[in-house]
Image 1 (cartoon, protein in one colour):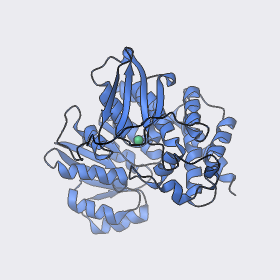
Image 2 (cartoon, rainbow, N blue to C red):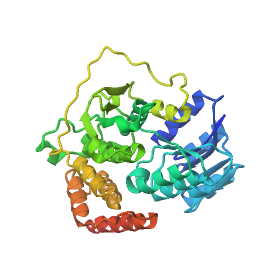
Image 3 (cartoon, helix red, strand yellow):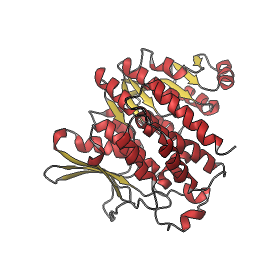
Length: 377
Ligand code: MG
């Protein structure tokens, strides 16, 4: 029985993780759940999964929930870290956002727990630190993302020195076929109209700008310890081939399945074993297409490569500028094209700290947030 601490249990990845737990009651058990503020859904989850402890980031909501349940409801700034540092669980599932999840994930690693990672900031902002700690503590980081799970599967049993290229596939996002002119007048609804994957709003916008692919490329570099020049992106709008690895003999191995996040979630929890499917079987009565990404229309992807080459605090700064800008876009306070424009401007002005500590990274994040927020005052 694998005991799970699931951080971010009411989000898109969180609820799908619980789908997998529901399917395997004899293999998986919930030890802890945490949410930001959605205590109504958390209450239902407590009734169904009987966790030993829960965390609610919002202190008022935590108090309200505590009145209704017998188990301990943690809250406060260090809530996630507190849960991560507990005994009594095996796998830490990071499916929430924010800076505190990075500290909590590091705590879980020091606590020698397996980590199933869905949160992107962790490796984008602090990849060097997190991977160093994981290595030092002998902790396996299992990716919960279709692309990284695919790469993991394509790399299984291979010798890393034979890798020629990690080929990360990309749906192209909701605006894939928009011309440069059309991109000027993109509405929030246009950008949210992603067909293939059901995801949260933030990541759907990141898919539309290809920033999400940029994050994934940075994560792939850290997870699989390859240099940026050995990673490429290919547009594959069907989202059936989830990524590929090309080896020195020019052989390419691909991972194929229906687009459904429950597979990477399940694999992250079942590895090194495989369990009966939670998802539909693939039907080959379809076609697959591939195209180069257009960096002129979608420059965010090239910014990610640049951030990766520079390293240090630069990816964290890029990520933060994007966070704030996507927020503004969703609030109707800026245009779609302002997102890449401001990210570029902020990156141009940032002098990266190389080999940063977590404090350096936090400082860069806070400064970037202030800087971008000021543009809207
Ligand atoms: Mg993905």
